[in-house]
Picture 1 (spheres, rainbow, N blue to C red):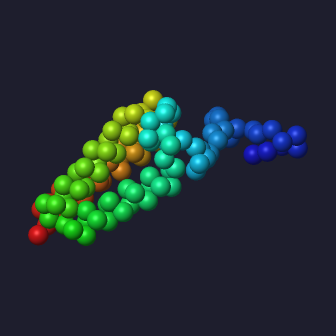
Picture 2 (picture 1 turned 120 degrees about the horizontal axis):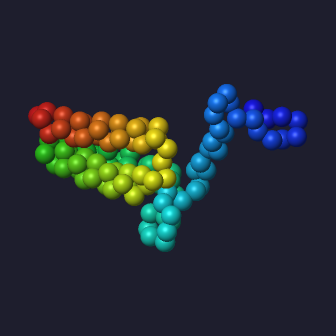
Picture 3 (picture 1 turned 90 degrees about the vertical axis):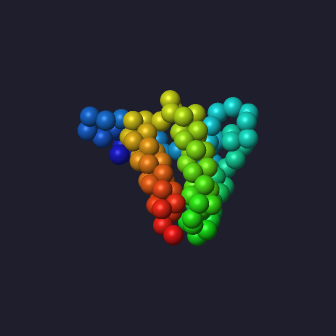
Length: 108
């Protein structure tokens, strides 16, 4: 909530958390991930996920497993920068991805 002077008042008992820019770096440093726009990373993950599900079988499960491993590495790299609620959300998504990979493997 903003007041007349433009300052922000935090909600009851909490603090104001600024929304992360969609153009901000994914991770700090000079590596390839620090230069990748978040939208490009999202689209890449979405395309790989769809490929894994559409292909199906063992090959699809392997594609999804590689995707899960990559997301797990990203989660480990960014763990300190995440709030507890962000951590829970990302671990949940990773668990769902692993469950989908197992389902694709077991479905003929």
